[in-house]
Image (tube, rainbow, N blue to C red; front, side):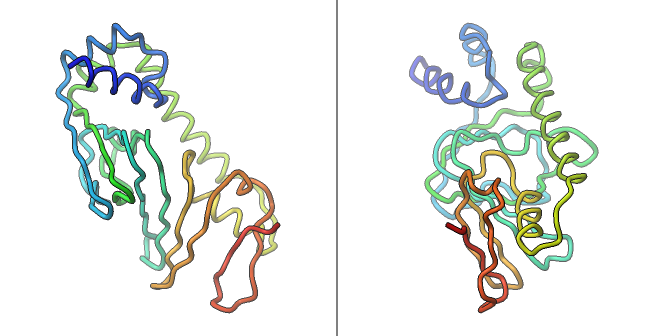
Length: 212
């Protein structure tokens, strides 16, 4: 138990949801909660778009791929997230409590899940957890609002930047763009926030790379 508790403490406290939680409080939580550990091989399905969200799922080890399709299924945008990572904390409450994306293991992945019932009954009793959860939801809402009202130029570079930024979340380390069955694979780094994206000669019609 001590080993499991220490590993969880060290890993989960890296997530914004548990930051600031005292060790004695976390130990008390571990004594009450039923934790569901799962290990996935590369390529295995974790969660499917449209599936009911009735738990918080934490990625403790490995890297996952989050794929979201457009409403008309004309393209799919996939982001890559390394551990530690919390999957769709916003989907556990609200009018639509279903996952918005499909998640697969990109490497060997270890997860731990906590039921929604325990979150409501126990975790919300801790003020720091409530504040962290509200901050996560608020930050996401503010980010989406700012992107909605952001002004971008009409150049191809500006439109590409706007598209990428409007489809990626914090913590993303790379992404893949599937358009009508054809693929574009792009690395993601700090330069994505700069106007350094250029369109290559239209050999395929949709190749992108970072300009030096």
